[in-house]
Length: 221
Length: 199
Image 1: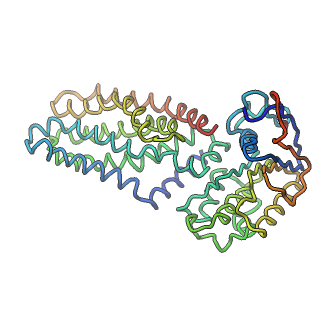
Image 2 (image 1 turned 30 degrees about the horizontal axis):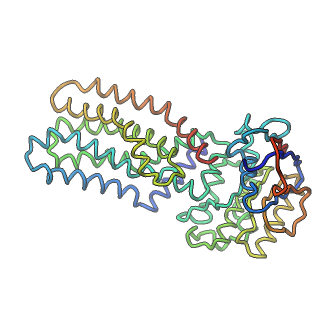
Image 3 (image 1 turned 120 degrees about the vertical axis):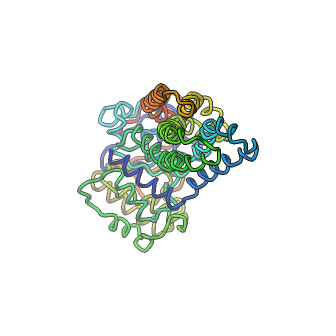
């Protein structure tokens, strides 16, 4: 546990000192969302109808953008060898990496989303469900993404391979995330979609750290 | 296949030197001994127990210094070493980080970020990890590369100290070291099948 906390502290420090990772993700997210009203036209009804979909797809792509760095710098400079040959369990290391990834991308995206949603004319009834859904969706994206990031370590054109691997797995998360916002806007109960998102998050918490740890060991061999 | 028919013992208080030309599998063997990956056939054991059966326990025993220095460019020398200190949660530390920095002549660089260090200085920061905690097995891959004469001597003093204190050191190198190992394994002369490594 101490090892995981030490790793979280170090990676957060690295991320704050470098600063560009989080900024790049947030800039990509807001600029891309803002492009839609220009492309589709300022018709408020149309924008409100598709706002949920645009926000989730963009959040998903923004997350994807930052995934390949999750293990890459530690792999490149040899730290990963030492991290994994330590008394700490490999799963604890993966968990620490996922927590840092979420704190530096998922959480800032969730905080920024309601503000960006204004440009898409998202009805106020959808604002709170949007935050709630993103709070459940973004950690799941980080967990599933970690598996992909570990699998493509050492591969040439890893970023491209990563999108092919991870995007299909993101589809169920996307469907239920959008469903939460859409049902809230149309006045239907958001419960079932939220429960599905919680279910996906729990499955990811159980399976992804184990799969990622296994993929990392294979990458180092 | 990189190597086969390999069978040797190393005991506490011994220094083993792995030699062989480039590509003969020195690094691969050292990584296997560190528990990074597993041999296709054969076993690596510690006190009669295969290390693949108890990876966590084995990890506590080893310090592996590979080709790459694992020094973060954004963190200072002190922060780099403090991280490993916290990560390995070493309690009741016998040697403080300050002492370790002094041994490797890094005291003046304590607050310098990794990106400003020369290759030799980064190597020294990497080697300073050896003195964090008290792991008995040191596995060193070409430890003298990019080190100057003075630092090489410091390293050998530290290695000899460790061996004298009943530690076990394995050094992989293609150079001739001014250090006498208790035993030497030349990977350049090996052929045929599966073997055992006993630590």
